[in-house]
Every structure is written in C-alpha cells, then in structure tokens.
Amino acid sequence: MSGGRPVQVRAEVLTLRPVGDYLSLTLVAPGVADDVRPGHFVALAVGGEQSSMLLRRSFSVYRATPGGRYGGTVEVVFAPHGAGTRWLAGVRPGDAVDVVGPLGRPFALPAASSGAASCLLVGGGYGAAPLVALAEQLRERRCRVDVVLGAASAGRLFGVTQVRRYASSVSVTTEDGSQGERGRVTDVLPDVMRRGGTQAVYACGPMGMLAAVTAAATRAGAVAQTAVEEAMACGIGVCMTCVLPVVGADGTTRMVRSCTEGPVFRGDRVRWADVGTVPEGTLGAPVAGGHR
Amino acid sequence: MTAPLASVDLPAPVLTASGCAAAGRELDPFLDLTELGAVVTKSIMLEPRSGRATPRMAETPSGMLNSIGLQGPGVASFLAHDLPWLRERGARAVVSVAGGSVDEYAALAERVGGEEGVTALEVNISCPNVESRGQVFACDPAAAASVLSAVRRRTPARVPVLAKLSPDVTDIVEVARACVDAGADGLSMINTLLGMVIDTDTLRPALAGVTGGLSGPAVRPVAVRCVWQVRAALPDVPILGMGGVRTGLDALQLVLAGADAVSVGTATFNDPSAPLRVQRELRQALAERGFARFTDAVGAAHHQLPRRRAEGVPA
Ligand SMILES: Cc1cc2nc3c(=O)[nH]c(=O)nc-3n(C[C@H](O)[C@H](O)[C@H](O)COP(=O)(O)OP(=O)(O)OC[C@H]3O[C@@H](n4cnc5c(N)ncnc54)[C@H](O)[C@@H]3O)c2cc1C
Ligand SMILES: Cc1cc2nc3c(=O)[nH]c(=O)nc-3n(C[C@H](O)[C@H](O)[C@H](O)COP(=O)(O)O)c2cc1C
Ligand code: FES
Image (cartoon, rainbow over all chains, first blue to last red; front, top):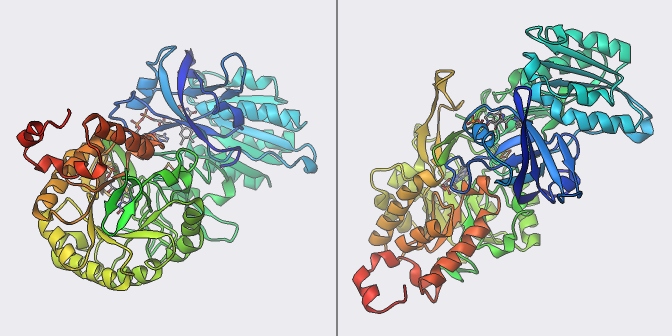
C-alpha cells in the first residue's frame, strides 16, 4: 500500500450527478484525499449504520482534491448494479458514507531517469476513471499520451472529453457503434501503438479486456500495467477473498490479494486464463484446483 | 476491564477472530492493536497453502459465506515475519493452528506453543481430517479429543489451549466436554456454519467451492445459544465467544450467556476499527448496567433475574 496509510472517515456526500449511464459521487473525505495516486481505490460501506450489507464496495478514485474549500474531496464514478450500488445511487448531499482509503497499489509512472516515455492508456467503461489523472501526471512528465476508450454503448463511455486535455490522440470504440468506431478497444490498439511508438500501456476495465490488452502490448514489445477488478469483501487485506494467480519475479505462481498487492499488476504476470482457478504449480496447491 | 481467560489475564475482553484480521498488521492503521485483548491470527498450517478457487465469498443478509480454504504462508513464514511483528508492536497474539491430521496439529503446537509472544493457542478443528474420509474433526468428539490431547501435550503449561468448536453438530456440549476432558483449557465458539448460495443469473452455486462458511450478525443467535448451552453444562470452563458481534451490546449478549472474552470477526470487514469500537461500547454498556467489573457480567444471564432486581443492582 504505497502512498501512505489508509484512513477510515465518515464522509459527507457533496454531490451525486449523472454522467452518461453512470453516477459521479463526490465525498468530503479529509485525510483520504491527501495521498491519492492514480489507481488507488476507496472502499465504501453501503446501506447505513445498521445495514444488512456487510461487505464494502470498492471504487477507483476518479479525482482527489486535497485541502481546498471542503478539506479534501474524492470523486468516484460508478454504475448502479446490485443492491449496494443502488443504495449509493440514492444518497443525497449531506448524507454520511463511511470511506476507507486510499487503498491498493497505484500505477507506477515511468522512471524520471528514463526520459519521456510514450504511453498508451486503455479504459473500458468506468475503467477510464483512474486514467484521467494518470494522463495528467504522465503529461506533466512530458510523456506522449495516447488514449483508447471503449464501452458497450455511448452512454457507458467515460472520460472522453476529460482526457483530451492531456492526450496526443484519443480513440473511441463502442460495441454498438453509437460513438467512435464500432468494435472493441483491442481492434484499434495495434494501430495506435504503432503510430505512437508505445513503450508503456496502462489499462483498467473488465478482466477480459485486460487480458486482451496485455496480449496486444506484449506483441508490440510493451509492458502493460493492468488494474484488476476482483470481488472484495474488506479491501484492506484481511479476508483473502480477492485473490488471483500471479507469477512472481521468481517464476512462482501465488494466489495474491488484489486489494493490497494490486489492484495494479504487471499484465504479463497475471495468469489471465487461470483467473477463477488455482492453477497447477501454484505455491501451496496440492493439486490443480487448489483445496477442496 | 481485565478479562481472565484460562490461565492468562487479558488486559481487555475483546479480541479479533481468526481469519478476519490476517496476522494483525493490516488493521494497524485503523486501531491500536495493543488495546485489544489479543489478536487471534488466521489459522496457520505447517506448509504454505493456496486455498480454494474464486469466487470465495458471497454476501448474504447480515452475513456472508466464505470458502477461503485456509490460504496461508505456512508456519515458517508466520514465525519469521508475522509473530515478530506482533511482538514488536506490543500486541498479544493468540495463534490459531489448523491441520489435516493429529500429527500436523501436534507438530504445529511444538513449533508455535513455546515461542515468545504467544499468549494462547486456538485450535481450529474445523478442518477435514485427512485420515478419516474428510470428516471434520470438530464434528466428532473422539477426533476432536485426540487433536486437543496431542496439542495440550506439546504446548508449554503456561500457554492455554483453546478448542474452536463448530456449531454444525447435534450436541455441541458433547464435543465441548470431549475437548475439555482431553486437556483443552478453554473453548472458542463458534466457527462458521456451513451454507450455500445459488446465483440466480448464472443458475449455478455462487462459490467456486459450492458450499462455504456463514458468518456475521446472521449467526449471532446461534452463537449465543452455543455459549449458553456450554456454560450451563460446564460452568467452570473458560469460553472465548464469537459469532456475529458488531456492537458492544452484541458482545454483551455473549458475555451474559457465559463468554469470558469475545472475538469480533466479519464486522471487521465492514468497519476495520470494529474490534476496538466494540470494546469501547461494551465498557460503556457494562457501566450503564452497574457492573463494577467485567467478570461480574460473565454468565450473568444464567442467574435468576428476579434476584438481580431484588438485590437492587442499579439498572
Ligand atoms: C479495485 C476496484 C475498483 C472498482 N472501481 C469501480 C468503479 O470505479 N466504478 C464502478 O462502478 N465499479 C467499480 N468496481 C466494481 C464495484 O466494486 C462493484 O460493481 C460493486 O461492488 C458492486 O456492488 P453491488 O452492491 O452493486 O453488487 P452485489 O453483487 O450486491 O455485491 C455483493 C458483493 O460482491 C462484490 N462485487 C460484486 N460485483 C463486483 C465487481 N464487479 N467487482 C468487485 N466486487 C464486486 C461487492 O463489492 C460486494 O461485496 C471496482 C471494483 C474493484 C475491486
Ligand atoms: C473470511 C473468513 C475467514 C475465516 N478464517 C478462519 C480461520 O482461518 N480459522 C478459524 O478458526 N476461523 C476462521 N473464520 C471464522 C471466524 O473466526 C469466526 O469464528 C466466525 O466468522 C464467526 O464470527 P463472526 O460472525 O464475528 O465473523 C473465518 C471467517 C471468515 C468470515
Ligand atoms: S478484499 Fe479482503 S483481502 Fe482483499
């Protein structure tokens, strides 16, 4: 958990506004906002103090503003999905939401010594949220920033106008063709990487997309950093629910926690095809499939 | 608010629950571990263990199912990294151990029991017994007893050994008695209840492991009942109570039923500062009810109610 220790605060809802098919929630969360880096996430308690929903819901931080008029705010962009996110969709300014954050390991920026790298950012749906601040920081380091954003439909695209400020190019794909090119982000990646001379790829979105982006990056000789989304119960590393098989620098596969060791992993270290299983040869696995 | 538990005097009555606090370190940003009675570690096994496939959890009304499968780094890594950290931090450690055979439990007791900084051993007997067609130790009084006697024999006398019981049995008193007769100094209860959730979109079991352990406030009444029954049958046996504690009043229920100390588990996922908050709320609840000492409340619900009123204990 780099970027300081996480804190727990009772945050106040500042605003909740629709953004396409999503909702953008801004919370006054002093302390949480201070150390946020792109890729960090927050874990929100849902349903109020006596809620029967015990598990926290995790969301990437879209924007964090330390200090300022409200003493620190964080903004997340989310899709109403199950009971917890539907509850969040009903909060009003002034309501209290318990926040834990910042959590996880953020994206690693190219080493300053290696000069200005050419970077490609790939976001799927709300996965674009952490990439906007990342684009800004890469631009500050004089990196070339190309961005590819994709979604099922125009309403599920996020961040297209926001990233334009920092990007050399922005490509958009939708599966239904309602905006940009019809198809998936991976359809346009080889082209964008060739034109930009991409050295580093950053991706956030659904797991299938991350696997495909990693494959494309590897083919182009670039390293991908991927922010994964595994079901999490605590978000802080105590429950062991959020694991996935990752190959370490020593070549050994381990079931690692995506909340503390991730959510950002080197794409080529994640065993994408084996997510959801305990592959043979994993440290501590008696047989393929792990323990019964 | 000291809490005697078997032969140790805990400075406070609230602990973490095994598997809900890892080895303590991750909770450090959220609470002062030294203020807790102790940190109960995730169950340690001899070898590193990968655990089960994902999904490993499903949320349920006021609870959750988990099928972690005891993922952990193994005892060598625990002794090299986790226990020294707790010791340096000044936190007391109750080390939970788990095995697939009596020999494995015995070997763990030998490795861990004498280490500096180990306040007690909690023996998680909810694992399938590899020697007995997968039958869970805690469901069979004889198997449970053989584990506890092996662990007790290999553990220094000053370190209490607690048997962690499963509520998924016909008669929990029978298993409790077998463990105590075999040398257990106290009992931890309850472990999770076996449950199952089916995903109505995929039409398949929600957990990769099909079944999982149910925990959280949903199981609290079961925990209170188990503690009550065992306290009534074995009034002198120390009990570490757990199951669904989210507030100080939840903890108080277990104490009144007969728990000498209380662990907070699943609630920690909802609120990482829960163990210390519960302890604070428990202290206040006791004061409001006129208990001068924590120990006065232990098992108090077993005493006849009219007597307490007649004695003029302030309400
Ligand atoms: C690191 C991280 C970052 C995320 N960022 C965002 C974001 O920026 N915007 C956004 O809309 N969503 C994001 N998600 C997904 C979001 O956490 C889930 O959609 C949300 O938890 C679903 O909650 P629910 O109550 O609606 O669904 P339920 O199905 O009722 O949730 C039950 C439990 O399963 C977990 N869960 C269910 N779906 C997911 C999922 N897809 N991923 C992880 N846990 C899940 C929940 O956290 C909860 O503990 C992120 C997830 C992770 C792990
Ligand atoms: C994710 C999870 C992992 C657990 N792992 C262990 C474990 O390793 N050993 C053990 O004895 N109990 C384990 N338990 C059971 C708890 O220690 C506790 O007995 C049970 O959850 C009931 O308490 P609660 O309702 O406060 O969580 C685990 C529980 C959960 C939710
Ligand atoms: S979510 Fe609990 S360990 Fe990662």
